[in-house]
Amino acid sequence: MDTALSGAQIAQFEKDGYLVFRKLLEPAACEHMLAVARRQLQEAQQPLEYEAELGYPGAPSSLDAEGGRTVRRLRGAYHRDPCFHDWARDPRIVDKLKQLFGEQVYLTLAHHNSVMTKHPQFGTATGWHRDIRYWSFTQPDLICVWLALGDEIAANGGLKFIPGSHRLDITRAQLDDLDFLRPDHAPNETLFAQGVPVDLHQGDVVFFHSKLFHAAGVNTTPSVKTSLAFAYHGSSNQAVAGSRSSIAGSVPISD
Image 1 (cartoon, helix red, strand yellow):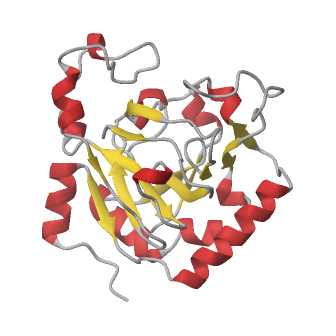
Image 2 (image 1 turned 45 degrees about the vertical axis):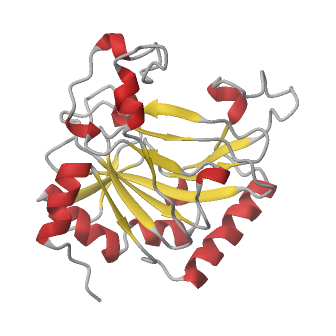
């Protein structure tokens, strides 16, 4: 099994801030993860994050409002089930991460580490943002590994990226209070025009940099979109002491 990146792939990641790997995980493993996730959703197995807790536009106003118990993510995926734990440590992703970081790889338990769900009707859109906006590490260089457990396209709220945006200097005026790119700020229009959808299908995986601007729309289909997301960092890039990023700790996953 070839788990290495080519020189061209490394250069592409440095340039664009993301890489897509098609059919990296076999269908049977994806279906097993889906079954586990569906069971845990049905049982409302904690810890959970609800759409109502985010306060994004279009979200239910409270947990008691209509759709208020719509789950945004199953938190703590690494310890939820062996299938998620094993995927987080799979050589098909870890070996690539080690090349990109150039050092030992750690999984942060504080961020992502979730089964991501986007439900019809109450699953809200996510504006253009960088994950690093609410993470605290000595360097802003982490990588999210996002696994599609089914189709992820525009119709059900698939991911969109602004290629190369991880290398941009963004001014405070371009961001709102939650550090999303402001749609009412004229200089952002050029950035929005560069956004591209990245269609994923079952077993596809995308690596993307923590400074890369990305967004996702609403789910207009009748089915729940389900993904698995973990975030990683190099051994020399540790969480800032006392920050939210440091509280849950990190796990070494490579030698």
